[in-house]
Length: 300
Length: 336
Image 1 (cartoon, rainbow over the protein chains, first blue to last red):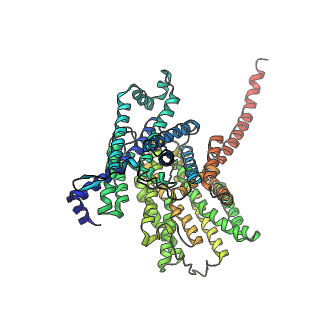
Image 2: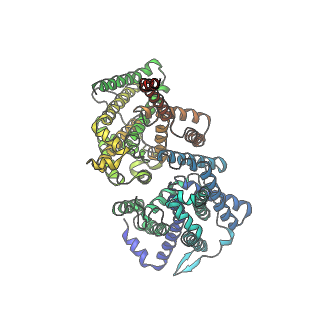
Image 3: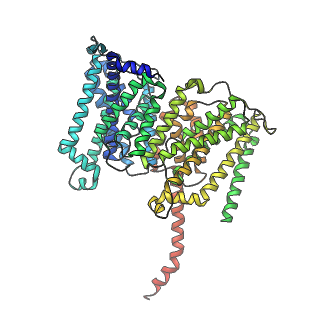
């Protein structure tokens, strides 16, 4: 435990800003993955245990697209859309066949997909670590805020994630399609009777969820190393986020993701060996006090 | 009831003798090693079935207890002041306490929440194992081997004795699990699985019952871990990785959740499958994943459960035929 270091960092503006920027990028990445997980669970009622795989796919797709085109925008689009398309395929071909079936079967299908994706990536890219490198467009001098240097890419990342989150929230809460999707979550038979193609909508929602995970992967690609299996640790953390925030709640996911981001960033200074423990402790506390999570409505 | 007990004892004895004398009939070290793996993972799968098949709790973090048993036992033995039985008991008890703590939080949740939170706790334990390098050796696993001091004149450094010891432990654990699942407690758990509300109305303390079976199953899984640690003379973080839990669930699917010994058959099948896949390819997950998908999407449930359902259906149909015939015939004759 090194609380002096933590206090010193909090009182020094430059250190605090550096850690806050770290907290924000960890939080926003987590938010994107968790929002997708939460959306899929809220509407389809399945927890996509293979969600981390889509994060990994997004990162590797972006890696390849960047190598081929040299443009980060192309890489970001390729990573997001690629993962989204994979999600639609996965939903149509596999997940749609286990709706309402044994929980065991749903878990097994996702387990199988995770194994296949991890090994597939290993087959194509090899098991070693890969670096995408910072895109040329962002190879500029870092922005100076209160004596701390924040890379321009961080600001870009946070902005993109925030914009996406806002769009998602508006799309679900303010549009007709969003209303249909919310209705689908509550009573799929009724929505089907009213002439909506529920199968397509399910696939679409799953695709959007995967797209969000893929986008997170693509955004993370320039600043993290890529290796088969990166998705899984992310899955666990985003699950913690959805539990704390409340399953199916986008706003809850946002708050919880930022909370985890801050714990990670500042915990790394003050109590590095207890960061994971603290995350689990908070999750356990939330589950005991309010099992539905901070902003969740449905009973757990 | 009495005849059932007799049947259980007979089946248990047969299993014991088959396992015990198989290496004598086929004296190949490879077979013995393979069987020890089956025993260790079989215990993991069978203890998991107490949760999944008996109580309807789909736990996805069961390997946490497997790893906890292995590490506690290995660390105690390396400490050097305990004998093997004492270290085993301590590891089992320690894991039971761990299961009590984790279970107290988990069993209040239902369905997928339960699955994921057990998984989350397992990954927490896994990350503790990885980061606490001074204690656990981190991702290299526990180095330095596990001493096997002689106790009661039993020397486990002899491979054959070690195997026999594992078989005895295994059959003992099976007997305990069978007794529990056939006890009133076991039937209460079945009721909770089939209709938790009703169980609650009848005055069953559902949370306490679930916690009870959670602790028992965690303790039994730890025995699997102990057996494996004793055999490989070490403990590795993979014991507590999520794929180990995934494999245990896959074993249940292969072997079925309906029959008591089903998971053991599943463990045997999967270990054999793993053995052959790793000979031919390094992309072991790819092959395993495709096999799972084919089975789940093709059969729509586990192999053994499909067989079991088919057999019971046939038996039902025959029984109904037999019951119907005498009733139907008079009604046919009446109008004439």
